[in-house]
Length: 83
Image 1: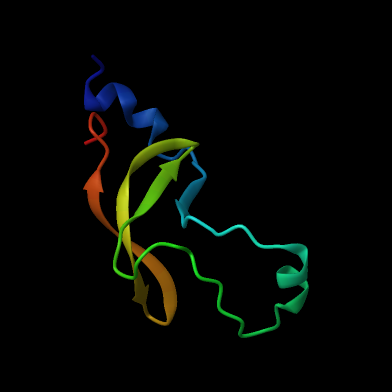
Image 2 (image 1 turned 120 degrees about the horizontal axis):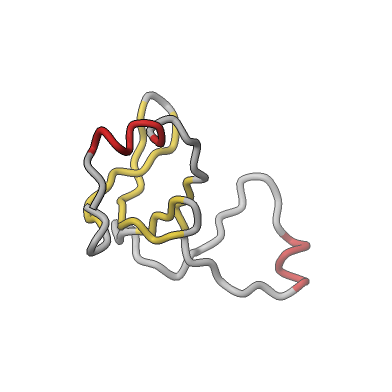
């Protein structure tokens, strides 16, 4: 296993980060009826965690949050073997 100092050259490599909300299936008619301000139910109860991916790999689970007027996620659990 690599030591932390052997991994230093990787610390600045950018990774795509993604928090995924499960979405519903919409009919074309429903999609066409959407307007600014429309709410789309995710099918997931409010307060439930969302899956978080880095570079396409599941790294854990997070809660939706707000930070300084921006949407954010708060990590609540890391995927086994990731932390």
